[in-house]
Image 1 (cartoon, rainbow, N blue to C red):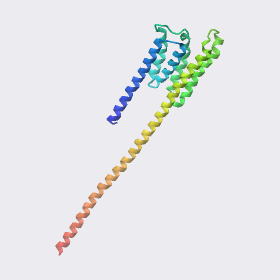
Image 2 (image 1 turned 60 degrees about the vertical axis):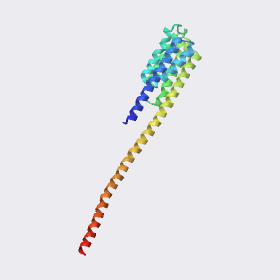
Image 3 (image 1 turned 30 degrees about the horizontal axis):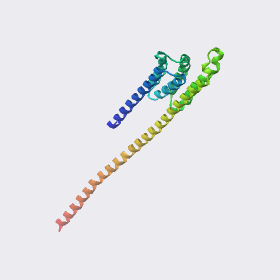
Image 4 (image 1 turned 90 degrees about the horizontal axis):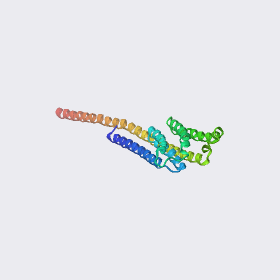
Length: 214
């Protein structure tokens, strides 16, 4: 590994941590400032998934920051006490599935998240008639839309990363294949030079013998 590669890796690690902390800082500020629950729900789900792209623990910390609104000076929206337990579980499941594989597990993570919310909205009011928020169309649309945007970004990022890594590996393989060929050519040139010198010495020796004979 060259010094340039090490420095590039360190810079990328720094940017990953810096961006992750920045996203968590934005999420914490917005949770502390509170607001209407649809906006808070959208921001919470989206930023948790985006922060998770920068490292697993960023996503889990973002998940915990959803409870910060309860300690805000202005107080959390009245529905937030219902939203957090309803969304935190499916969101945790989404992160766990997301960490289990590459881009092709993301649809399953999305299905788990959306399916859980839709099932809760359908059967929740039957269990508890007062539990009407899960069946709220705005609640379902807001959470699922934020999830779809976050997972779409994750899918594109992972696919682009796979393509770039394959191109880099192909370039390294081609470079390694050219090095032995170049070394073989240099070795052949080095072997031909002594042969040429030896041939010249033989010719000169023969010429000297003829001259002496005369």
